[in-house]
Image 1 (cartoon, rainbow, N blue to C red):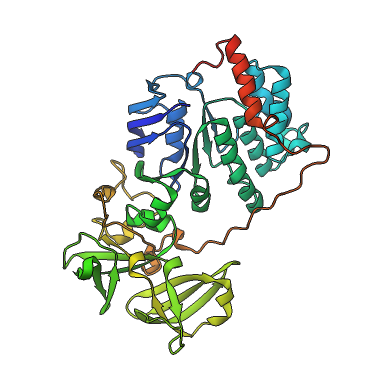
Image 2 (cartoon, one colour; image 1 turned 90 degrees about the vertical axis):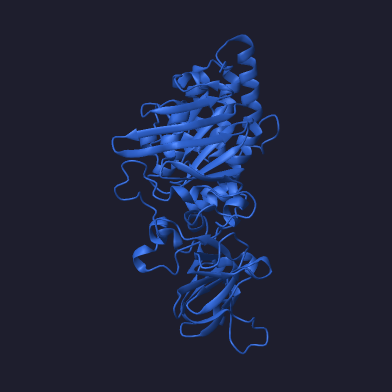
Length: 457
């Protein structure tokens, strides 16, 4: 299983910066998700790893060997592109069979691997169809099955689930990760979907404007974001801009609109302009006068209540602060209505404090590229480095920004459905250890590699 190391990679396409001194180290057998907005450099990063794009400078090291100048066929990596690249003149079955047949694997094992892969993506009954007869989502599943059947040690997946319907996408998340782990693959999975990344990844790399700005476990990225952009992009938070007025009991006290808020510890000095942020899931609402009502930091007026299935989002307008949102269980849907007065509070341990970005908060929250970013494309470069221990960078969102600065990532997301078991086609037994794709893949590759040099990296 190869370790992947990217060292100081740079890549420009004319005036567009796709990789800006990009560094990343992925351990053997890890399942990594690269998460970022459109145009951040995710696909370029993948193409440089598999050899389809050559970096202007820097190194790509695979398994301890410098592979920067190697051709794609020498890298033992398979990439599933967003265009699918299916062979239009081959059936679904023969598309998936392409790699096993080319590599000379035993015919019986190759056939079983293809059938198992088609079964995993729920298309074994369309094996004789042509790609042009399939929907976009079905074509994507065939491309995924073909990539998994390739036998490569490195699997690069560029938005592999984006064209699928919601229920099937949730089912395939678990199956894809489990299969990759069982096969012992090193996987890099590019996605826009934060829920997908949080559920599937061992670690998540947040990429923005050609740089990795945070790399950590899903919990680290969600709970301790490195920059306000990360906090706003992974999860939704309320943002309050204020001034640090003290550090009582080791906490940070921020004053905004005449109100003082307690937040996590930080190194910000008194008088510094600060951004206070708290996830909407940690924000609490209560009705004034109720016996179980918690003392609120501020009072607001409910503007609207959004029903999202398992949860609801309540948006309240607070004088001087703008909109503050709270995500609550759906059983509280009848408790709040537009016009209600509510108290807004949160645990101080869940409120995070950031220094004001040098480029300004509105620019920091932008999802698209910096206007005029022909050189670095990264106006807030100083925000990418954080001290060890307690970081001044914590959570964030744009629910209180002016309308001109509200990024789309601040919109509430629908809750995920719980995956069902699904029905298997008649006549097909449940997988066992010796009929799983991983077992068959290992058997085929070990037998072939013992007789030929086809599998050498």
